[in-house]
Length: 436
Ligand SMILES: Cc1ncc(COP(=O)(O)O)c(C=O)c1O
Image 1 (spheres, rainbow, N blue to C red):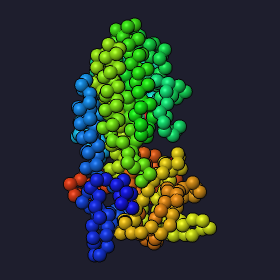
Image 2: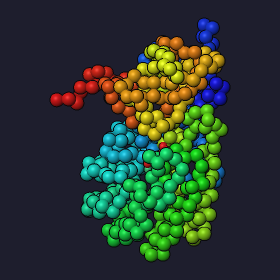
Image 3: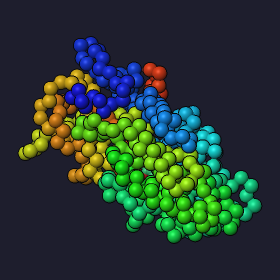
Image 4: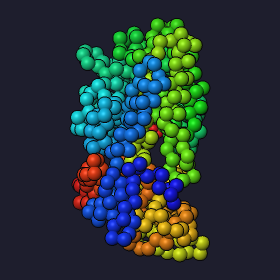
């Protein structure tokens, strides 16, 4: 159980309240927060977000002489609070499409710090990008032709980066691989040559190259050959057209430990140091000037900062299982059912008490696959108790749904010992708000 505690934000403490040991994060008692805001509840500890950014910054400064930057991948968690926090920390914010662009703009993220992604950007996405973004990452030649048509007479046209598909996979779940040959994302090398030619012909502000190999990998090595291929391509492009990117982004994707079996986990610094050294050496070998290295992490910034708190409704014994049935599940965290993601959990009260036997943590929804955690050694938890699932900050709320009329959870932001409600819980009225 001590090891499980390491999965929570560093600010997590166990505090005695009336003879009961209770989990507290960011100086706030989780039991009190659950009582005040209800469950399921998502809390975000800003000190954990800040610590991850500090680590990325320190690593880039220590290992890369060409200058570095961070784009926060908003797809991991995007709301006004997250976007304001990112802008305040001087991060760029990666938005996918008009919806996320709207949130970033409403949050006041400066245009120069907004970058747009999207594998099939709609006209509305492109229009929103033209007015709110400083950089558009172009996914394909068709999109580039549409942008070229829109550029006529526009004075402050966003910078363009080209997304290349290096044709190699990193080790992660197949659903999270993006850089392999048959991926739907980005352009092949021949298309890249065409894209650079078109940008030069049309006088488009082409400033960068981007690739993203996949999400939630734990070993940076497989990025090496992809980076080498991209640098070979850049040398070819330089020879053919004279173009050299001011920015190179190897995307995001650095993984995090979700359960005790993932510990110890390599550090952000191991990942950045690998990238930085490989890029500097590759540029030297290809006689290319060092581009600004813009990393694009989502999960490794925001996952650990988030903790989900559920209340156990019923406890059931079936032939081989002990079921703890929670008040949330696949509607707020689809990851276990989508790709078998493995999590861990602790009781909020007396979290370090002895284990009884394995438990299955099931959600309330009408799907047998609605199980958040399987076969987890767990204390003797009773109906009415609270459970906290650590590492819940990324790709939960953003993929959440109203399945079975589920109401999206409330979100509370912890900073300096204060708790602030940043997203209210949905109400049943919200469920019919769009209906005519
Ligand atoms: C283009 C791009 N950049 C960055 C990310 C962020 O990945 P992660 O949250 O794993 O760091 C993703 C996630 O899929 C992505 O598609």
